[in-house]
Image (cartoon, rainbow, N blue to C red; front, side, top):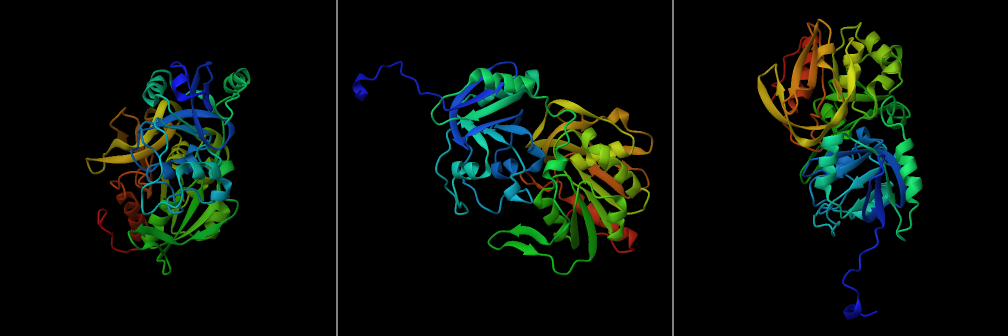
Length: 402
């Protein structure tokens, strides 16, 4: 049939579907890996950093809808991944875009996004109204769903609906065990410098043990960049083994899933570590783990916080910073016991974003101060942690903001 004789009502056959648990079917154009994945759908409002987002282990069990319409323009490279072991492919299982992915235009690009998604095993679709999907999530909460990609456009929609409706969701699910390190290792890489790349920490002045619930690389880089030898240990490592490493500080990492489920084995360890006077710093899931260990509670959020433009107030300084966030559970501030102070709060919804243990070198934050992706307003928190170590050793403090 010639172009002139093509019926005006001819439509393109969808090659990807997002099937929600309520039976809603959203049609799009498939890219990335073929097949299907069941997960929770969230939306992320960041304008940049899609590669860091999709490789953040905290997104395990989730499909990320990008509200920014143009994703993929700068391609992908081997420097912007955040999971420790790319072969394990910890991170988001699906992605949803508005516009079709174009050829990359960046001097740093090593591959196009579609090719990279295939290699990572991430199922994706484009060509849908992501604003409408975001509005649905804001109204009804983050739905369970199946994302499916078939180049021939043939789907068993009834089966996809059944799978989406049958999935139990993230509540009660311990995903840290799936994304944590398989064994202990030493991290030496320091932050990226333009036109130079990453550096290496060869003369550490302190030792930090990082408990890996799904840690991001740039967290470890910032610790190493401030003079730390960082030993990364699996999520289920016991307190006795950690203390035998003689750490100067203990870091509780970010990670995915329900904090109460991970807390079954993580909380007793943290409680034993808190019996010492070793400084402790937690981020994201690590923040939630610390709160649970101190007697607080966590709860599932309606739509979660995912983006690089979230305003947070630091009560310790009175300043407001713009931060990167990625969490679907939050600490219940009203549940915090006496002696645990709230230090940071979200200015979007008033939810808790930080705590400290009164009179002790122990604190944590819900947001991501390592800024991958996102602004660097909260980099000072790493210096705050290092200063707790330096104070304990009788050394002068570093300026929190260099």
